Image (cartoon, rainbow, N blue to C red; front, side):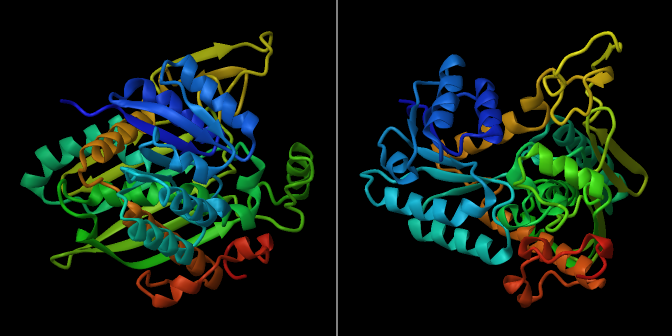
Length: 420
């Protein structure tokens, strides 16, 4: 007899939780059982969305431990703010102690934590609970990237040899919510918010299908961070007015541009490169969202920003709509890309299908908390490199104690990412 659908409880009731809920329409064998949020009203709104989409009859909570103890909840998706990850895991542990049946899984949105020490603590807490984990990185499940990688490794690599260079870039005009702009809360700026996607996608493209993620070892990282747009006084004022004074880029800025090069080593000693760029300072049609994979005698290019559908609205058509066409849309008029199914296009459907099946049937997930730790380690190496203006070995044990200057509120944008 088939097991009952996996009943998911979401921690957090904001934008990303709603994105996940919308994606579950295309995922079999799961329901939304509950949503816990800091504000019960917001949690109730997310529950209503799930009901409207016929994804169950979820219950709203304002207490995570109580939701976790609910026997109708089988697995947890953590979609709360970065600064709350440790308290959320503590609440999960408290609720888990009151369950008759253990949770089947705990999945956490990117990035796993604000710094390496917190990421390691989360991993240790999950191991103590004995619950399977998942790291919610949607890009490696994007259909375009999965198909492109499959073709290259099946058709080109056996003849010409493995790929040696992967590039990834994701740039848009800035996040939705105030907390993303607050370095102490988010843990950084554009680098921590977005480079987690690019670093993992680029590594994954270079990794042989079926090989473990540690078959590639990062050995050197060099990076730059900068304040290009939002640290300018007039744009810092825009942020201050937009978020009611809770974002102060005049005195506590975060980087809005980041770039990094990572050198990897294969098990047989070959060196590979990944180059990634991420920013909040891009203004254009939709997002800039590109990927490249290069090797001897072949190349793959993917542009997720070009969706295959565009609309043009003249200056006579006015309105507030824009992000209903594609996430992070910069305009409401002109020529605009449209994503007919964003949750599938960006990999949310694929990742949620993967983790639902893994937790439901007890299979190892392709990405677990260890993957989140690995990505966080690389991002801390990037910040350290940018602050000190040197190449950093990501295996350096001192990274465990490193906290970016942006997160400490001491980063100065005029350094343009060279030194604190």
